[in-house]
Image (cartoon, rainbow, N blue to C red; front, side, top):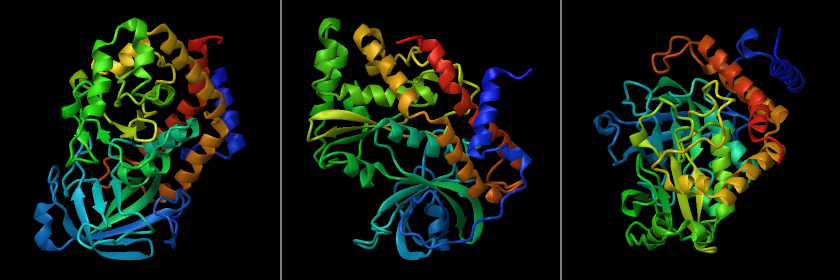
Length: 404
């Protein structure tokens, strides 16, 4: 007998036109089209990269220096674009595998952009069997009111060889920060295992020449030294607390275990590497910090719709630890989770978005591709699991929280 959540999910899939993808024949590969937006999610982008033979030996993970590359993005061709391989603990890959790419269009040609964009990444999604984790998760953050990078999907070739499906993603210092905040503030990128309490252990992506981290030092002092009785008030002088609770609520709802709070991570990650995958920007206009999501390529992938949203965070994530220990902040966090479920977790809309993306990429998921060690069947099964997570997570969380 099918469970009530399973029946509800089946009905929602029918309403949204999102029948099980495993039962449908593969879609044809969409044609190459001209677009004016590299992050247009309604089309499958075509990205061709060409690097001269003399520069290939410099394309290794961890090498910061960029090499010149020819970029063909849909109908736009740019010469001498700066290219390097992405480096990440889980996605680090050489050219012989399926590496991620970081591109800077004006590295060698001053002022060169593509549709107004000068920096973006091509994420390989080797840890995401759906290719859609970032796409769906960042959209949920935006629905909840948190600025997040825009993403799209692409077929990528390198020196004429097909490398597979990639996620095209904005760089935070070239779009999201400018859209949401006043310019000129410090943007900090999280480093695995390093918390806000170690200001000089984090990467400063803006204003790095001045290297003035007194803003983060002040926040660290509150986290480490402020008494419990005055913690919430003191915290609000340096951090937009409501915005952080919203950020954290979505992080927990999508079970982004490899993120700042590190909740629900179980045995998937060594604790010493948490917190991980986050940005913090100090908005000069409000003089307060805002958290921004990052590295969301492993959300939704566990059968974790039952995972508690208020589970204990990583001990190293002191901001989350202290918020959870403060009764007032804990109640505000739980209230924010309820609000997000009510106004942002629109199951029919999210499932429709997933199905639209699947129709774009399923013809490009190649069986036996040595760059993507998974089968078409694995892809389809993972999509069904993602749909199930979306369909059942809200009901499970509401059961955890009980009535408001």
